[in-house]
Length: 195
Image (cartoon, rainbow, N blue to C red; front, side, top):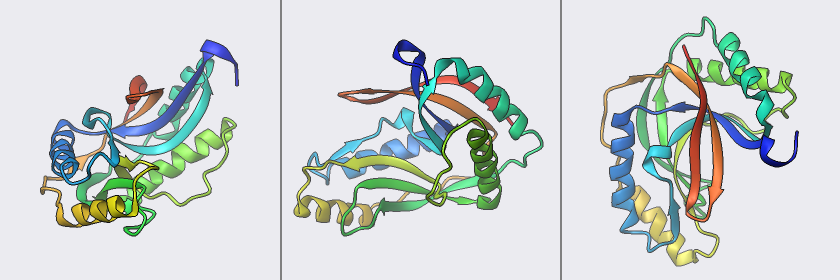
């Protein structure tokens, strides 16, 4: 990878429909009041379904990545997805990442993931060693959070629910740039492939 201004921090993800963003914003609002500042919440407009985190990326590779995504996803079926509950990684005893789940046509979504993974490995990125677990990150528990804070967070998550929405047909994959700031990550669209 190149140094300096030509290196970007990137990832590949599905952008969410406005209805999902709105519902997740209300869920975050409900949870925020119960977590005493122990969670760094994601801006609702930045919530997405990640297929592959790339990290350091030479800016000159952006066109190749987008062309590759277009070719790799040609003829792919379109998954129909729904929001489905809340969860925590790694678990409720020691929550670090708070997320909303995704259900529906997960086999087709897995196919998209595998196509993207194969493309990016072919372009020189390391293969992902963890299994694909589709989720929408809502917030990250701060390192300084006490065990009492973590217990309060787990309780709030178990008592909160995600309002029901009709299914959404995912029909695009986007290459994002992520810029880390003290206020949180800022995401920019570097290009999109419609399926």
